[in-house]
Length: 305
Image (cartoon, rainbow, N blue to C red; front, top):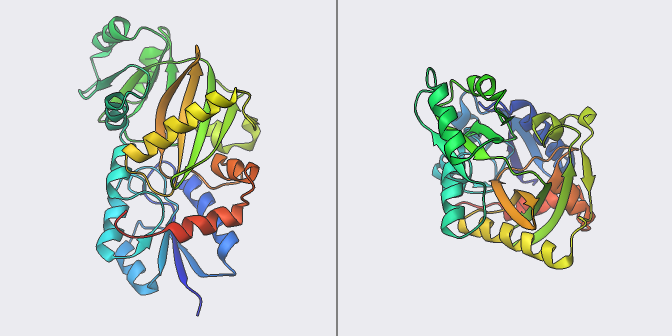
């Protein structure tokens, strides 16, 4: 009898569309080997799980609810094996403030930052002065709890107020010093350094559109043109970050390389698995095709993650 795999997709975040793309890509790889079904956990989520009785749940959710520990806690309570990181690591890595505190504690270089927890309405001038005093422009502003570069803006003195206003409904906002230089990403697979890729976006940075829009024409460079020792260094940092945050399965760490230094921006515990996604591309370059990557993720699934 075929094992049952339930693929979670959609959810409540702004990344619903990408989540469904990931789910469909995964489904197409394993549909002949397993009894598979894709469900959106928005309604009667637990009832749907209990009705299908899956052996494994493939978590293809992105952003809030799917990537922040909530769905992981539900799956732990149901006692069903699932993919990617567990409750604690997911809740840590979705929160950019917590991850930055951990990076600093373990002497991993990350851009300087400020956190806004107050209501920003009516406080723009005060916030502007704080930025000038502690960071200076340019800066990057983003929600504390989002993924796929949703709501991320690079700001100078002229557009700061305008972009800050776009995040006025967020409970917490991260403002960090903008680091120019090269954009490099590292994939980790279990306790293995899978590989490194460099991105050259035609846009200002590797934002949501650059990640998922074929027309954005982001250039992907494999292998990365860096000395072997530097590649070993950045991959060691990514593996260290993966471990100290308690991550499991596959993760992708986002770096900036500037003035011979690697700045770790964040860890993605639910990296995309679409045709434009970076982890499958890195895996392919390392001799692991998409099917075998998905099979490894499924084999790695468990509870108590």
